[in-house]
Image 1: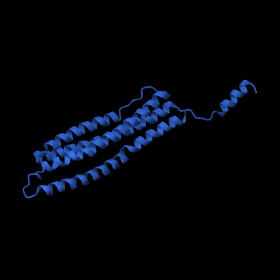
Image 2 (image 1 turned 30 degrees about the vertical axis):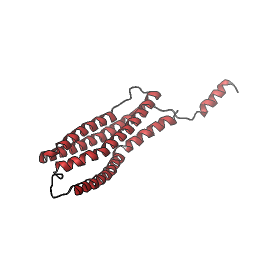
Image 3 (image 1 turned 90 degrees about the vertical axis):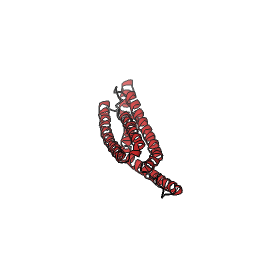
Image 4 (image 1 turned 180 degrees about the vertical axis):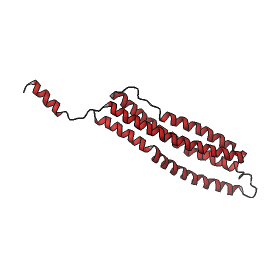
Length: 192
C-alpha cells in the first residue's frame, strides 16, 4: 500500500460528522429568543405581584415594609433575569461556543440557586410583616401563644407551598431551556 491509498482509507474511515457552526449558532439564537420570551413572561408576573402588593399597602399602610421589600425584590429579580438572557457569543468557533455554553449553563444554575434561596427565605420576612400590617399583633382578643402558633403553622404551610410552586414554576419555565442548552453542548462534545 502506498501513501495515497492509506490517506484514502483513513479519510473513508473518518465517519465523525463535523459541526456547522452557522447552523449551531442559529439554533443557539433560537434558544436565546425562547428564553427571552420566557423571561418576559416572568417579568410580567413579577410586576403584577408587585402592583398587587403596592395596592394592598394603600389599604393597609402598616404594610409599607412589605411593599418596599417587594419592590426591592422585584428589582433584584428583574436584574437577575436580564443577566440570564444576556447574549455571550461573539465569535463562531469551537472553543468560543463551548466556553459560552458552559458559562450560560453555569449562569442558569446560579440563577436557580440564588432565586430559590431568596424565595425560600423571603417567606420568613414577608409573613411576619403581613401579620404586623394586618394588625394581628395588636388584636387584644388573641393571646400571644395563639399568635405564635398561628404564625408558626402559617410559616410552615407557606414555606411548603412556596417550595412546591417555585419548583413547578422552574420546571415549566426554565428547566426545559437548561436541558436544551445541555443538549446543544452534548452535540458539540459528540462532534469532537
